[in-house]
Image (tube, rainbow, N blue to C red; front, side):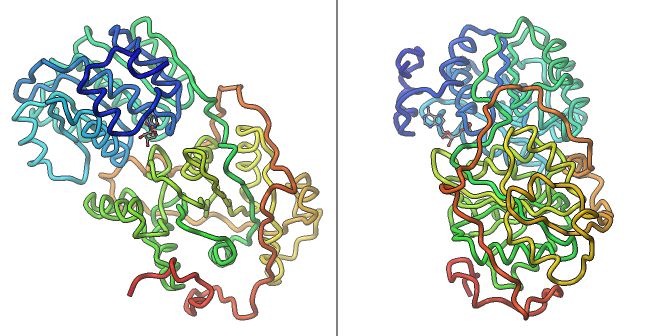
Length: 480
Ligand code: AMP
């Protein structure tokens, strides 16, 4: 199929041509015709499939010609995170550049006054995170009675972040006669229930199995003593050819601590998480996107949807609590056919999470020998039998990791107003993906770039006070 076959207006075709797109992606090919027929649509697609254009293009087409009244937007797109909402808004600007539609981005952490001023002028498209939308609605700054098109993006992420009650509330405030589209990478029962309750005879379209990892990403586990995770990360980073990397932590506090520690080690690294001021978040992400910042230490706020081309590495400093988040995190690399490498630092406590991840992605992940540095420090004295757990992975690598877990650190909530990550941070039992597609993929032993083998240096310290500046390639060091 060609874009011409979708029957889009010349303005949209011109914008698509400017983007250099040749053909619609499978989700666009499947969803756009139904959206243009004003059908409700459930789209099973993860980020990277072109789903944003899949709903944005037909929305621009359908909204063209109408006019919004003050405080009464004509369409609404709900996004779980501010970053994703901002990215959708950018897509609207890109695809709608020859169409005279107005939009407002309603996200927390940005000036409410500015948002209210834009709403007063009347907007065709509202792109919002649920919390800020409900705040402005509660203050009477917005009326939802003119919404004719609703998009719920990343519905499963909304579920993970505890936004489903907000979504239900918002849906109940909208006119019943509307078109609704819901996009989700997975379809857990709670989301299925949402589609039954709020969508009318939706057309279901699905692309690429959600719980699979890209075949262009090589994945490794490295076992660590819980007290020496930073040192192990540094050790891996020194040996990998890193162009740029996301480093994911489960807790916001650890994001800050790790970013600071890496900076002390001489890396050009910054933190990104939901407790930061929005302007700071936007600026930091901008630097990472434009290539001036090579290392981004982040929470799961950056796990989904963020489209940064050519990311060479993803590091999971912590194993994610939800197996689907593993897929989303490592999906930040290996995009658009590029290759990427993803490392996960594992402690003995993480065994169950790793098992759930492997079950989800249907891959036995290769274990690196590099983590053996942990027990070499003499801090773990478990026998192989006592260390338990990954007998299978040990046989794969030929070594048995011996890290011994200590209790996970407790966390104090920094800001009760920021709900999005608080909810995502709280450990949950792994949620099983209900998608059964996806074939088993093994990294071929000779093809896989062997993970580095390196004994810890005698001067490795765990205090983080002395630097390894000379080990760090020049391009990863901060520009002075
Ligand atoms: P998304 O899944 O919406 O995050 O999109 C992922 C990437 O695909 C974005 O960088 C888009 O610019 C790009 N994209 C969207 N549609 C197409 C298309 N038809 N052809 C090529 N690239 C596309």
